[in-house]
Image 1 (cartoon, rainbow, N blue to C red):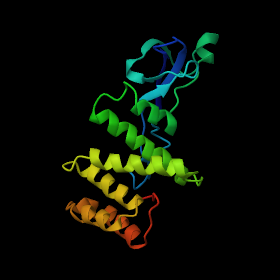
Image 2 (image 1 turned 90 degrees about the vertical axis):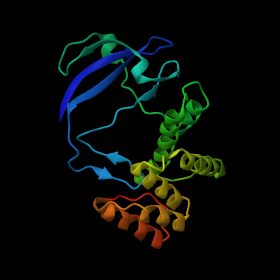
Image 3 (image 1 turned 135 degrees about the vertical axis):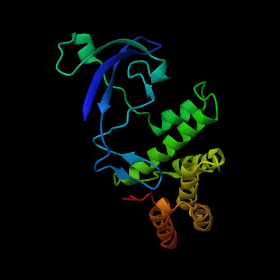
Length: 210
């Protein structure tokens, strides 16, 4: 795994600095693949596409931020650059806020936000934490999954697998099986078996596939 130079970007609102790390190369050796489509790989970490300024709380797309400079690991840098925090991922509440702001421009943006809300809830299960803490969160979780189903493209195999997973998470096991069994790609048979087994066990939780 080879790190790329770390970029310094500025918040479009308050101009405070944040570090944007990156990698020149990596690999998925030892990666964990989950039934909701999320992959966790220590040797190929994900970086946020959208983030929140720790100073003014502005939420913005990372690609739209101005790059002030960059440095490589081991370089001597100014105290201001050293003190700049790294980009962070949004919370579930932040994703909901973004959904109701000008950041939601089209269907692809909405799909991105809703998928990450889904993954964020499932991260609690991945980390053995309390999944839904109250009735309000349960309603948020349910409404998000219901709307997420409407966004998936029926001609996109990956999205159809995720749609089947949403139905399984909701306890709609027969509908999950119908979608999974409609996918006729031999290379995916081992994945289909995992979903069908989980349905037969009435298991609604996210599962590790590998």
